[in-house]
Image (cartoon, rainbow, N blue to C red; front, side, top):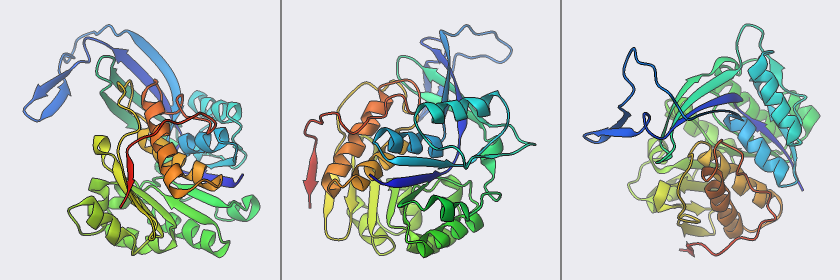
Length: 320
């Protein structure tokens, strides 16, 4: 197995779950939680406290798969931060490199979830996960990972560049799942991709980095920057290419979505977890899809994460 470090956010997720008052209301092409009135008091069905964030979710995937998983990120010394550390301990993730920010609260999301549809709206105070400039690239010298999995650093392109450059110097493979803030810096982002071995984005995100209208065009152009490009397209599945093999894939299983939070993290980290364990490119894509499907069937961003030992059934995946 491999040693994999996850660099990204850590959040306390607070779910407000309801089957009636949080039902979406359509206004044209837009859906809103239309039954919650200003000044009203609303009874909800359930409150659930979970832990999430891209860095945490991915590190849990790696640990459950049997890899040596390390988390790099910021929390505060508050109840939410302690919840994050407990969760990492429970999952066997090394949290000794976590940094504490004294004047920030741990990142917290309040998630309004419609029980019937699985639709949700997320209100986030990123707190300690808003900044990453305090992170030290020298940690990579101590950790000596085989892979570094990076999620959004909230647009801190300077810190991103430092970690990418040092990882390359140490011959560490990089898998990158950029966020909204990184995509806003598209030119700088494109230059940073020269360090990246595996990139995962959705179709809309890919079109902000390279030209192209179809998945085939987009993945072709992304392969000029990275060895392996994976583009997801929601219910349509996606496409992935490592330069020599290209696959179109559908969804793993048509299941009712209970909570879509963490689906992207589960797909990306699921791919790397399986691939770093020695599985083929094709089989790693299938596991990624299965991991994502399992996550959306349960409440919370990581309760449904698989262990890599579960038998997988065939899914739509075709070499092109």
